[in-house]
Image (cartoon, rainbow, N blue to C red; front, side, top):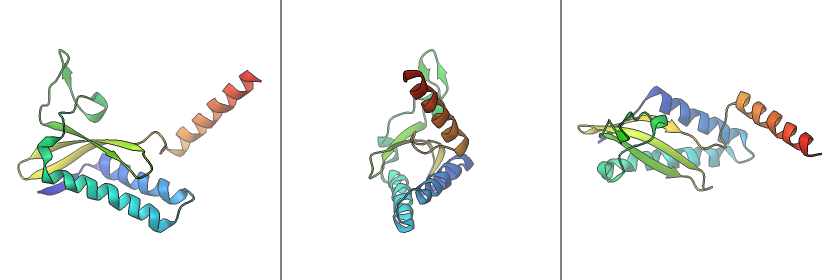
Length: 129
């Protein structure tokens, strides 16, 4: 089976790699962690129907009357060596797998989101004092 990634997933994987490189770890380790995630995504091809049908709207599922509409949309959960979890949705298209969405760990955020988290934390601390 061939593996394909949507633009959103490719962007998420690149952001993950950039975030790891900016952490205080060796660049080689950051690359290893990113490669380990890609290997795990590739390994899904060995048994693509073993993962559950995706029921999460954030991963692209449509819910009608409380049931998932897209029965071919599957969910794959990945946990890296640090224990951070990631969720991916994918569709099996014949002999191909297309990863459509990625929900990153809450610890990898854009710079603007990080600023908002810091501001909110400071406000909470000042309200306690």
